[in-house]
Amino acid sequence: MKKKDIGIRLGNSTASRSIYFHGLVVLVFALLGLRMFYLQVYQEKKYKYLSERNRVKFRRIDAPRGNIYDSRNELLVTNGAGYRLVYLNERKIDEKTLKEISQLTGYDEEYIAKRVKYGEIFPYTRENVLIEDLDPHKALKIMEKLSDYPYLQVQTYSKRKYLFDTLASHVLGYVKKISVKEYEELKDKGYTPRDKIGKEGVEKVYDEDLQGKDGYDYIEVNALNRAQKIIRNQPPVSGQDLHLTLDMRLQRYMENVFKEGKYTGAFIALEAKTGKVITMVSYPNYSLTTFSSQISYDEWNKILHDPRRPLSNKAISGEYPPGSTFKPFVAFSFLKDGLDPNFKIFDNGYYQIGKWKWRAWKRGGHGYVDMKKSIVESVNPYYYKFADDYGYEGMVNVTKSFGFGKDTGIDVSGEKNGVLPTPEWKKKTWNQGWFKGDTINMSIGQGYVLTSPMQIAVAYSILANRGVAYKPHVVDYLERDGKKEYIKPEVLYKVNYPASYYRVMNDAMEGVVDLKDGTGKVLRTPGLEIAAKSGSAQNSRYEKTHAWIAGYFPAKNPQIVFTVLLEGAGGGGSEAGPVAKKFIDKYLEYYGKEN
Image (cartoon, rainbow, N blue to C red; front, side, top):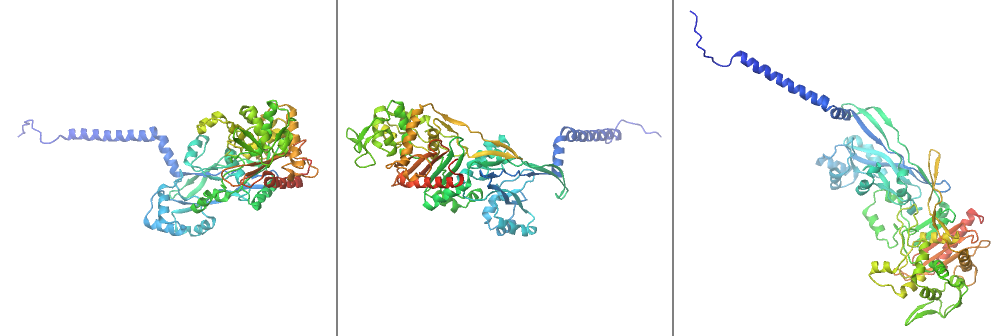
């Protein structure tokens, strides 16, 4: 008997379940397809990059920094091997590993922990730098044991090597790791957080030229991260070499003069007709090797509290009252204001305004004095009187034209401007008015006047060249692959004063050396005419005066300009004079009187 279909269904029909199932499968595969499309097409570049990054490692090859030579091609600065200790597990570390590293290196666990947590991690390789500048002896010992420490690696890199350590340290400067602030300023020029850069001297000024261009390797690695082959390579391009104008024979000799005399101060000698600096001493100097490495707290503290300030480049950043070396330029201002150089005044030992007296250095005075005698014997009252008569404006304008109050633009970092005071400057700086006493003190290079030894040297080169000064420079040329790029002489100042002014001053400055009462007679050298002016400048830091002497030779056709400054040494002629004389004698020994 056929059962009657009464239209009741128990459960889902097989056909319905099949539709749902097939729909779900289609949806899943659609989603997978979309995901694959997203990953393989839309995100192709990203995942291809990540894949390549796992397969290929980037290794930077530091470019050798350019060498530095003196004027006679004596090598002064080159590159040696430096060592750094790197940790291969990024920022992950346990107590056992921490203790092992501490025992291996000699650094305490707290220091190592901080380095792991905050140390620099190289991009691509992800190596964490624990010790940037590892002692060479310690590095070699660690390298012998590295098989026991798979999480450590000692890397070698090119490190600056200063062959004479302290010689010309203020001129050369040193190289150290770039700071965060420096990186922010220089990153647009291609610098990286890993770079070492020049911090002082020519290392800083010519850093981009010395740096060169880094190379790189792209290394294919296997699943165990072991190198298989170099698949791409770009060799580094070394930096340009610097050839200095300095003669290191003279530099070495003059630094030794300062050392033996226990002097603090500066010495400069430059070529009058080119601006080439052949000797530039700032003493005491400092160790370039120490400053290019990790310096200990004790070493830094000792240098920082040395009253002689060894880190200060006294030749260009020292600011001192110039004393009587300032007088030739003040005398120019008197000539410009109409003073007859043959006009005489009587010096009785002081100049007086009301109850105020400004005294001569010679008790009883110098008697009748004209301009020549005022320079030869350094007669202060002569300058007091005419400064009072003519006022400060002429002095300021003329001395400014000789470069006072302005930097010289020398290619060594750290130069300062000095001070050429005016009523406006005094009001702004001290909130005080200008008095006659300020004008009178200024006339003999005292009061608020401050200058660097290099500014004095440049001003005297204007006298030597009868109106022209060349920009001082310590680099003669840059060289790479035999191609030389010379630093051409550049006119710094050109002043237009009558030739008679220079004749008057040259005659007077020759008298400083040649005449019986000249304050620079210690410079007398048979067969050589020398023009000079000594000075003794009062200062608040020392009981004795600063000792100055500056000049040029041969007087009739000057080739060399020189300046000596000795802090707190006493009389210019008696103390600075003999230092200049030693240079002159040594220069003549090397170059003769014709140069």
